[in-house]
Image (cartoon, rainbow, N blue to C red; front, side, top):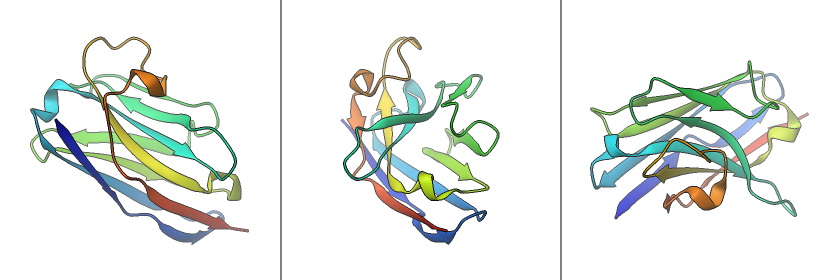
Length: 125
């Protein structure tokens, strides 16, 4: 089991920044690739960003490329999402997730084994 707890969400004006954190406990954190997903009201959960267990590779959704940065600290058992130049369409509940195994299908929510409860991000126009 891996327990994940997100923090750092809140209300911000368009153009502002937030940094989300996800603290992990349980099994060895460095065994897992980590991802961030988001879900807006009435919409399906969508991929935002992912990072390989070693931190050596990352991927982003096209909608956040150049604005969001994912990083991890295996010594601290944490993954982060720095969000800059936020837009109203970034408003959603943001979830972190952990994925064991291969790096493939890393953008697919069903591929992830463990999920946090989510943190709300609201961007006002």
